[in-house]
Image 1 (cartoon, rainbow, N blue to C red):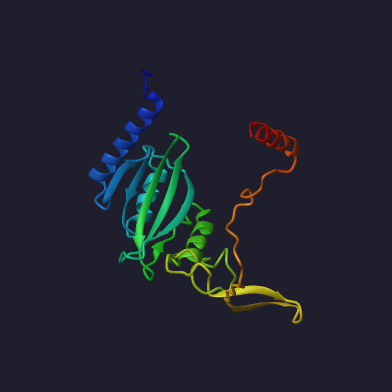
Image 2 (tube, helix red, strand yellow; image 1 turned 30 degrees about the vertical axis):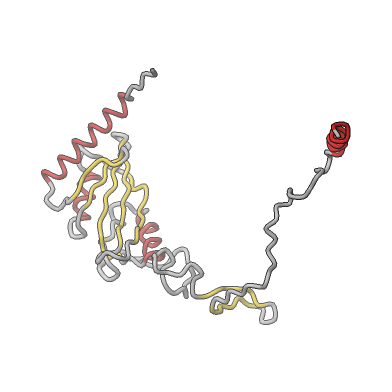
Length: 220
């Protein structure tokens, strides 16, 4: 039987993350959840305590999460606070990661963290553009991936897959025009017969076919 040993380094890292989770739950009243999920520490906090908590994670020598690697949104339409804003942080000093999650709705703004990490401006603009999440204190909250005149937020679960408008270039007008989505389905006769069915001889296999036919005649 194979000897399946635990990676000592991975076990030590998970032990450190479990210790951090316990420390956050015991010392930070605003932390409602802290646990290790698939080798990564996940912490849930509130919008009101987000900036002080992230500042603590960045500056405290016990944590040193210096880099904001990503900020993204998740949509759960059935929840009263349908959006989760996720902050993925990396500690270069200790080589470990943490995921901080806050919840919000369509109208309650999440405090911007662009003053902690300047790169957050790009991520917050993307989250606003695709999910419609508002960020208070963000001086440049504009769309970043869709057009300026785009309506709606395409990564919301209730946004139609086809969108509301289609964009095309009109040759006669010599300009780009927007029109309501029109999905026309021409009549097509689908042939579900496999191309291999009924084919006795494949291209390039004529000699083998002749051998088979000869064996069949000799067997008769």
